[in-house]
Image (cartoon, rainbow, N blue to C red; front, side):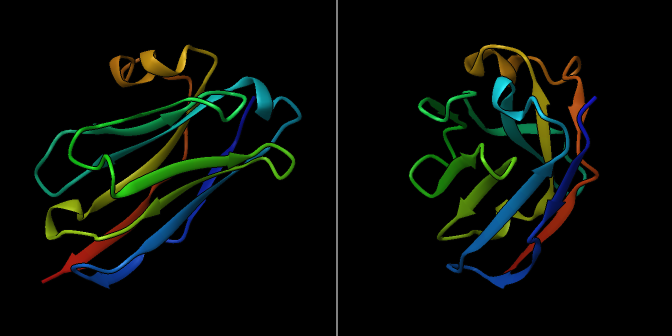
Length: 126
C-alpha cells in the first residue's frame, strides 16, 4: 500500500514558477514509477510527466517539455514537479501517481494506475 500526499500548489502569475512535491508512505518507494497528471477546468485528466524508479529516465507531454522537470529523491520518498514559465493553460488540479509499470507506459495507463494522491490546485493568472 502506498499513500501519496501532494503539496506546493497555489496561485502564480503567468511566467512564474512553482514546485510541487509528492510525499509517499511505505518502504518500497524506489520500486515505483512516479508520475504527475492534471485536470483543468472542464477538461479530462491528462498525463504530464513520469520518472523511472531509479530517477534516470523521464517522459513528458509535449506542451510541458522544456518547462517542467520531474525528479525524485528516493531517500526522502518524495517526487517533485518543477514548473517554470507557467501559462494560463497550465491551470489545473495536479495529481501524483505511482505504480509498478515501465515509465513510458504511465501516460497510457490513466484508468489502471494503482495509487493516486488527493491533488493540489495550481492556478496561473494572466
